[in-house]
Image 1 (cartoon, rainbow, N blue to C red):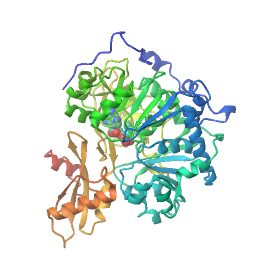
Image 2: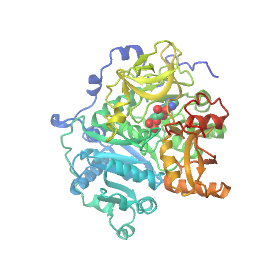
Image 3: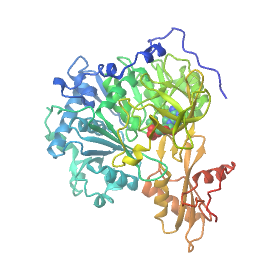
Image 4: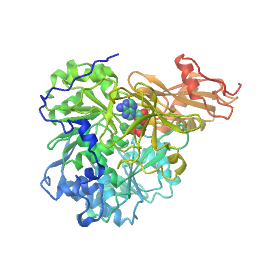
Length: 587
Ligand code: PRX
């Protein structure tokens, strides 16, 4: 275990961090003051994320500043200044208006990291609609569920993704009125019941005035998963932009002139809050790479684009560690000033490796879909304790709590004691509910706290340390996966009687999805059936969500009330003590 802190440079910063005196800033912090860093809509017409991200810069000194640089898989580059973004997002907002969308109706996007995705996200917000990005590697089933739950009115996607994933489920989504396709006009014309994004954009006007937007108006819908039940649509409002903006400055240390690269896909919340919104509200340049992870491509990109601030994820860091530091020496990464990581536990070794590989430690930070923005962070000016998530952002009160037998909540103030990580509600980017699931939302709060579902401890100096999840949700390569969604799909196969799904520890991905299935009497376990089930799940769920391993078992262990005992499956898989099995149904 690495226990030594990585000390902050003693005053020798090339650029002074934004947050130096942590205690002082926390003591005097007010979200109202933070909000004053933003402009609000002209004429006191409220607060709109897209105005803060684009229009206010497009109307000022940053008009011609590079806002987004998109790098295609092929290496082709397309640049968008703040003025360009204003015009394009105005067109998209006009396009939605022309389609007759009413306020708060949902616009979904299923696309890789292409410019149209970024333009539609911000254009949707301009028109007062709600943007809901989906991960393009999802299979048809997770897509159908989410568009259905979210009652999607418009979907932006590409011709290729439409053919592979939407055509087969379209009939089951009657509320989806418009499908806008990115692709060649000839191909789009041949697909019934779809519209040409490019053509509609060309026909749309360049001028758009953002309508009155209440800070509490819905803006973003991000799906996340729990142990049981359907995916949950976490609802975020325009007010969230206050947190996006200040956490960009305080936790990611954005400075004017920065070139920022967030490697996350907007299909997950990191890729929206920090891959789209925070860098733009801060008026800096954001790099978007269309391609998937490739260590050498990434180092070349960091060098060529002179990236200064880099936000990535532990799985990527572990993949880079595996390749080694030798290759990094070929690149000139002197512009890099700050590296941060999120989404899953960052091994202490990875923090130290960053120091060796890039001359910079990797700053872990913590948050969730529900929190909307970074809540706990290793700040640029702080000593880093490798393996710790850091300390709460100014304006955020975090605690460790325990549920008493009677269901009430007790805060654990003692250092080093494990409990559930909890946050005091009230920060601007806090989710405002799970769409149409009041009860599930209500259950997240008790004793004046928002309960995160994570287990953690706090040390004597106020640093938080991640321990694990309090539930059965799986984290694979940073993606949150609900076991129930996977089990339900496996049950659709005619051979499967029961299924139980767990996260199996994996040195690279953190966890992989592993399923245990019992078969119906007429079926016999075989390698062929296993391959068939793996393929069946992959086709429906997509590669990210589908199990990587399947074992056949005689019975899936359940409680007497019929709940799958995933913890027991996991203990058996890992050869750990089985714990309390008194509620196990006799088999
Ligand atoms: O379990 C925690 C883990 O990721 C969960 C949130 O996942 P999601 O809603 O997909 O949010 C993604 C936005 C970051 C958390 O409940 N997690 C996140 N960051 C860390 C982490 N686990 C350990 N260390 C972290 N830094």
